[in-house]
Image 1: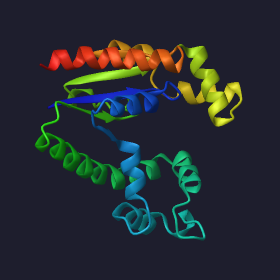
Image 2 (image 1 turned 45 degrees about the vertical axis):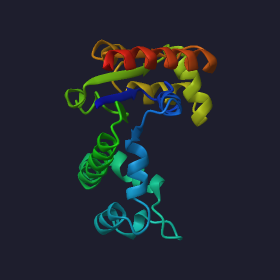
Image 3 (image 1 turned 90 degrees about the horizontal axis):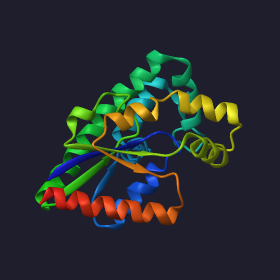
Image 4 (image 1 turned 60 degrees about the vertical axis):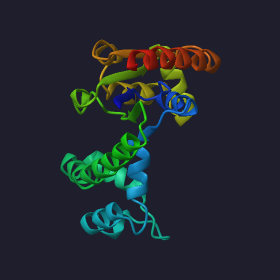
Length: 200
């Protein structure tokens, strides 16, 4: 089975590409979705987070106050590292189980959706890496609209990540999402047809 890393910067449309890939019958493992499952009440990650950070990171209903937790780790790199050390091994365990499941099901290709693939220097773990990108001005506009941000704040968030040019240079495949959703549908379809051929 081909193990493919799928990545892309904030507001490039990576999640849309992941959904389109799934619609063609290929499994996509989502690191963020697994993280959310692990931090629901009664899940292992939830207990470890509350044990370390205390009840200050809980909402009155007992769920994690993700905004409060984000504030804490944003202000303190040591606490951010602690959170990563709690969640990363649990996420990797789940990913391994899912990957083995798809191998047993004889899937030809499996994609792993990892937002910070290059930032965390994970590219060597994959047979291939696919980066979703779009023109900077379009990306900026999309981020402002999606998150109700002013231009300066949106630009700051984009610049916290690696430049797209670096990711593109280190990827085996790139998907340009600068156009319409209709054009993206066709671009993803063509990519998958080509990639499936390469796997034969």
